[in-house]
Image (tube, rainbow, N blue to C red; front, side, top):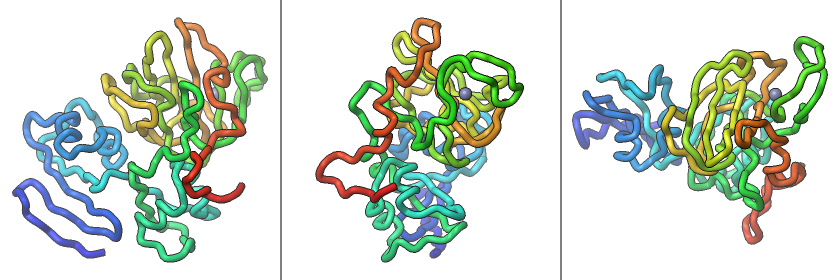
Length: 272
Ligand SMILES: [Zn+2]
């Protein structure tokens, strides 16, 4: 890694990596996350994913934040990962990841940090319905009556659980406005999005990358999978309310065997 400090203003320095660079920006009095995101032409979600900001609505003057250029996200490789599993997590292709990281082979090792450009994300979103799958994972608990996995009592499950490794990106299933982002009892770290008459809840996150009042698009990164709140392991609790009543989210999502779908003409990212 080359470390260069380019002073194109007194406020920033730049660090150049393989396929991307990071800008270190010092927060100025009066700056808002919205303004900074606009200035660098990136999503506020990307800034929140890269930086730990205790209150995104009240930035601390003088604090330094990191901004990637081009826009994208980092994934730290874990034991058992390969480029195909990582491509699916980000709904992109292996060749996009190889190109962005200047990889000449598909060999990767645990701990290695991969850059996933935002423009590559979503090539494999299944858009055949109004909602997209928020994560690539496996349904571990359906909607409806069940024996609760923690207290062993019969209880009503208000959403579906999608099991996925800790740190898996969560993409907004539909467009809307963030109405809640924070800790909420059994849900742990939770994001709630209002979309017309519907409310969508994403529970048990390890990290939240949106703020209340933010406009999100279908596919905006809203956080990362975790196991916060009442949970037996990393998964996303995905819940949809229509006119204040929960519904089975499967009715709104593309079929579950088509979570990851590449459009024709784009390289297939390999088998299961
Ligand atoms: Zn659940």
